[in-house]
Length: 466
Image 1: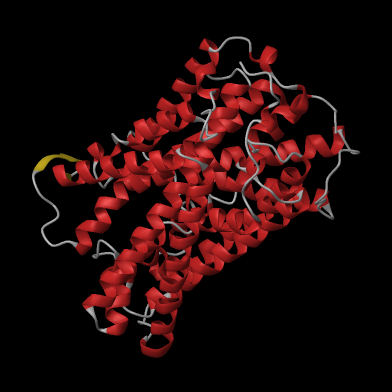
Image 2: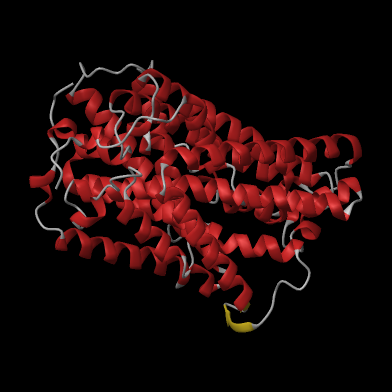
């Protein structure tokens, strides 16, 4: 293994704008265009907005916690670095492995979402049905397009973080313009359909939407993952994170409200792309609806791009600490990217279209639990480091840290509870819990096979050296 310290192995080439666009583009991906009808049908417009306010509040508070930690430890690996310093190897592995589930879940989601978007735009795209999964047909065209997309996006990230960031900026502008256009259409042409409060389903509908919000907001933590490649002051890292969360929350709320002004939730949910259908209805134009679908494809690519970056850095950090096979920590000598970690994640994602469109819901819910569990452990790490290392250099030190930390802990633990058996929004068996069980067993095997983790831990993240 290269003896160069972990946080010095990458080039610092990402600007403030790059980091902001990576995070917002990761959060505002494809979910808003394909899931908005489901949200409004389950919770109504007001209930869905309430769910995103709750989710946005949790993520905003957690984002502030991340801000302090990222400014204090601006190294590649983010959550892995914080939890390793605070909780030791096992706690850090649990935290980072849960996070990787969420990240890989997003990548898989986007691989399946790409052919779903093209099916809306291209007449006759669904061709050569091969089999069905949970009643949903799987087409050869979906497998081909999803697989080719996975290869192209993996190669883009393989060739360097800078080209990936530039690609992200262009796509983020397209998404922003689409959201603004949808909102303008709702203001000028919309009329709110009559509906009972919370869509007539009560608080259960709000929680059904709320458990999906962690998956929709995940992406702000791509900033800590890429911190070792950021050419910005540590304090700036801390400030960008909560700002990015706030922008994404406003975008989601605007899309839900605007879509709800076009037609009822029961009508929207019948469309494969509800936000595009809303745009088509508001402007009475099939062409504009299809242009909206193109913006959705931009969202697929931004999220896909960000989470390939984030997932590969998280896997790299685990391997660098000896918690995964050492080969996954290899850096490409020319492109300066974690080549084997990228190839592993990209290779796995190639197979996801084999499971069809129904896999989207399973992945969103199962990955959401992994994300929130990781956030719980990051908040615990925040408390441990505040107590154990009060003199650590924290360029962005959160005022009233105990208050914010307690609030973050309460909110994240509450959200974990929403996924558990007995809750109205609990994960389903066998598919969603099956994903969790498979990922847990895979992680346990990898952790045991990798041997003694403590011998590989870098002093820069383990000790009291700052």
